[in-house]
Structures are given as C-alpha cells and as structure tokens.
Image 1 (cartoon, one colour):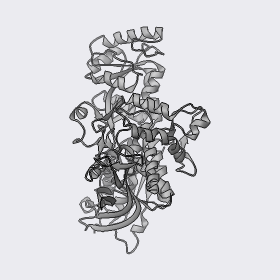
Image 2 (image 1 turned 90 degrees about the horizontal axis):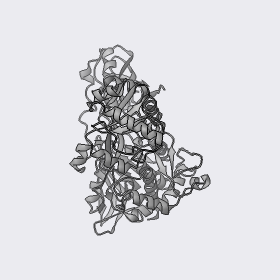
Image 3 (image 1 turned 180 degrees about the vertical axis):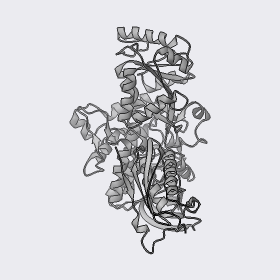
Image 4 (image 1 turned 135 degrees about the vertical axis):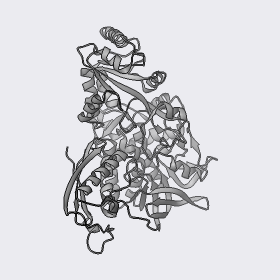
Length: 587
C-alpha cells in the first residue's frame, strides 16, 4: 500500500532561520522525482528546490520494514533539509533504507541541475554544546523495556527523560513478533485459559535446562500477569493486542513489535515525556556511592543529566563481536539489532555491577539469510508449510535427519552438525510458506520472484526445480538422494507418523515444481547480563544493591537459562520495564 511520509519543515526556511546556504544558484526551481532500491522495493521521493536550496522532501512511495526502515525515513528527510546535504548520515539498523534514500536524493538533485559538491557537507564542524538537565528518572534505551519503564514512571507523576542512541526508537523490540506472555492476566482468566505462575516457571526451567536464575524467574512469573493487564488496559499503556478465542499463554500485538514501540512512544511523548534520539548514554554519575544520573553524547551535544534514579534498558550484546564467542559468529548468522553492543553493561560494570550467565547466547533454528546478510526468522512460514505437510529438511547429503516440528533445542542440535540445511517443499507447501512470511510483512511477492530468479547465487538461497533431480543438481546434492528421502517421507505419511515422531499430514511427491530454501541457525538475543534484586535494582559483585541504579529488558541476565522460551523475551521487556518504573517510584 502506498505510504506518504511528508516533512515540509517550513519553519526552517522562513526569514531568520539557521538553514545552511550552499550558494548554489544553478538549480531550476521545481519538484523532481527519483527512485532507488530500498530494503523491500523502491523508495520514491519528490524533492522541491528553488535556485539555491532544498525546500522540502516528500517520500511518496516505499515498502520498508515497519519500525526500522520506515521509521528511519523521516529522520533522513529532516537531516537533508535542515543541513542542506545529500550526504545524510546512515541510520544505524536501517543501512539499506538510508543508502537507497541517498541515491534517490542525489538523482533528484542532479535532475534539478545542482552541483552536488556544494550539497555534500552536513552541518559542518560545529562546536560541542554542553547541556545540563535535572529530572526525576532517566531511562537509557528506547526499546519496549525502556519505553515501558519510562511511561510507567511518568504515569505516576514523575518527570522522565529517555535517551536512545539510535535515530529511531525500538531496538530489538521493533524487529520482534511481539508474542507476549500473559500468565495470570485478566484476559487469560476471562478467556478461560488454564495457566499459573507455577506451571510457567516449571516450563521455563525445563526449557532453559535449569540454568535460569530462579530469583529473576520468580519476578517474571509472578508479575507478568499484572504487567500484561497494564499494557493492554485503557488506564495503562492501552497498546492494541489481538484477543484470540479461548486465550493462550501469550497474546500478540497488533502491528507486531513495531506497533508496540509506536504506541508506547506516542503515549510517552504525548504525556509530556522527553525523548532524545541519537543520544548515547556513556557514563553513570556516582556521588557518595549512589547513582545520580548519566552522561550522554549526541551530534553536537554533550549531556549531563542529573536524576534521582537511572534505569538501564540498553538491550543485549549480540552485535558486539568482542563479546560473542568466535564459534557462534563463524557458524551462525546474526539476526539481532544493530545497536545491541553491550554499552549498558559496560556502564554498569564500571561501577562494580555483577553479571550472570554471560556465556549463554540465544541460538534459534528456522532462519534464512536476507540480502543484507542478516538472519531472518521464518517461523510464520515453516509453520504453515509443515501444516500443509509437503515439506521436510535435508542435510548436505540430501537426507532427512530430524523432526522438523520438534522443540527448538533439539532441532538446533540436529542442524548444527550438518554442513548445510535445506528445506525441500512441493508447490503447495512453498506457497503456504510464503503466505505465512508475507502475512507477517517479512518480505513481498516481488522479493520471492527476484530471489527465485537469482537461482541461489545470492541470499536468500531459494531455488525452483521442475523435478527433485533438478534441485539435487542445483544444490550439488548426491544424485537420487532427494527422491529417496521423498519416497521414505511419503511412506511414513501413510502411517501418520515417521521415525522421528513427527505427525505427517501430506505427501511431498506430487507433480512439480519443487522448491529448496537454505535454512540456517541464527543468533540474536543474549541471555546473560546484569544481576538484579527483587526491586529491579542492579547489584554489585558483593550482591549489594547499587543505590539509584535499576535495569530492565535484555540487559538483565538469568531469566531464560541457555535458550529462550517462546513469548518470554517480549513478555520480560514489558514486565521488567513496568516493574522498574514502579520500583523507582517506591524507592
């Protein structure tokens, strides 16, 4: 659907404004349209100029990712007009969108007759402004955990400043599916779904192989219901969630994680909260062994923010190669947020904060590699494909090796010993796979056509063959291997269950075409982090609370054990953020 993002910035262009001038009078006044490839198709912009300056930019068409590329475009427009530059800063986490915008902008300016060299500098070597502020609470990190903490504290009448180092809010939360644990919530009870904190704890301990920190886990299972009530209620955050008949352990948000981020951000800022984007927390201010605020940096500014309480919600460290084991980096693809570099951990460790479970990195199956090189989960796709039935995984020898619908941990163990993993599908299953992915807005029909045309020479590897033998040739699998695996699979379908315990619903051997998709293991969330007490306070290496310092979200370690439990990461972001916001009020 065509989206229009318009930022006219007229206030910057009136008499007396500080808009830079490029002394470029060679342009022909008018509006010029140009397009360039973004992450999910072309980005089209309309650039209006006079003889010497950019007057306005309107994004007239785009299909970028909700909460990431789509959210980056307004900041790119603003910088280009404000600084009169075609060399806008790349928005971290939205690199492809940023580069596409720059290419389109240069094209439009060239059409106008501009000398691009006079529009190639940003605001120049500006001096650094020292900014000093005082607030009740300062939150570092603008994902769902940080936004939940900030909004909760604000709703209790406190003055709150939230700083986010990226130019867009959301972090890992904006990339999430937003399935949210709701154990003990009013919705669960009203929908008649039987659940309890005790059963949730038991399931998470089993899933995490008892590496979970029980004290942190207890906080989660005993307060997640109240936190979910808060996020969906009109008197709380009032974030739109989908209420399914009969309920469940989790509910999903409308608009996925990006929708939750947008809703929380709007509520926070419209309620009077201060949000500084592109502003990185760098250091904790400590006075008499009490945390009293933070120092932060932004473009052209250095902040000293004094506060009664600091809440760290800076996410994990998955994008920090110095902190991730080499074997993880070498064997798996990264699928997390670009800003997950562990900076909040470093800030806290500088004041002797304790950490826990730092060795555990969350690895998950069912992934493809996108053109950007980042991993992308395919759970919506594989779920639909396996429901149809005509789909199975094979290794580099063309052999099935596991129950594709088994639990994530077992599937990971089975996939990691292979040199390569491929999902083989008949046409019905392939269409179901893409239906699930496109319904989740992960990619488009045009993407599928392009990837099939690439025939495996670039990511993602997605190949079509008239026969299974064609796929064997394309993937360099042993001759006859896929046919043998398919015959064995179809024989098991007649029995209803195969040797791995998977219940089979449909044969794969039909008339072609057939399809192969290379599947990977991905890593994104990190499961270790800061150690906290029952009040969400960070504790030091002596297990004593660090006064004035709280933490929420992925920066906290110990909840999950060695692998995450479905719905709990997003559930923990909401719950820990809400709890931290309440705790600073109580303190």
